[in-house]
Image 1: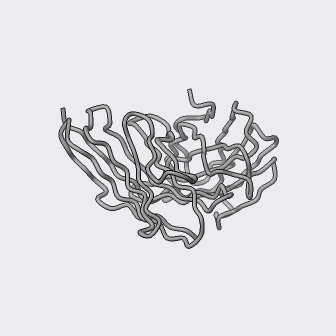
Image 2: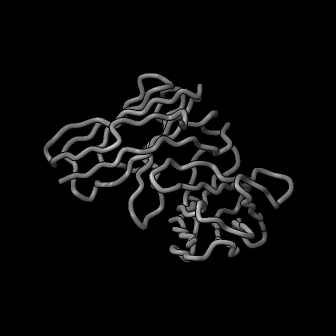
Length: 116
Length: 113
């Protein structure tokens, strides 16, 4: 049990579908993140939210749309994805945001996305 | 922006052998350094971290890492590995006071019983 729960664990979708990934943290943290993990590549930071406000969008295509309704929940809405978007999407949380963080992140188990 | 280099992506060794994984980063200022581990089918979890003080830090499961500022390095070591150490290991760095972690590509370590 990590304190960060992601659903679904596996998702297969077509390029014209719309789906969402969900992340919930039970750690009382105030910052949440989406990372993309692809084979043979470093983890890529996608989005950062501090106190529900997006503080970073790391040049992510608009077909990925994040939503953070409160400090405990984070969504990643997906539409018209490409096969190269197939990857493991990791959610993480931390105590402290930009300028006040230690960099210690707590990760969920990830959502394995396959785009056909 | 900071970057992290990890070499020897695939490492295969026998139980009781010693393990050392290299990590070099590029950033000129003060940094916080981390090693994360991802066991098969599990989430990424923190192995050890360096913020300040003694450059030799000890983590869980007998792992340690040494921060050498002059070499911009934070190498991970374990004197005697076990089969259960089979995992992927990621080095990460963030500027001090920042949560914007940059990760290396990872080292896939396989320990043969």
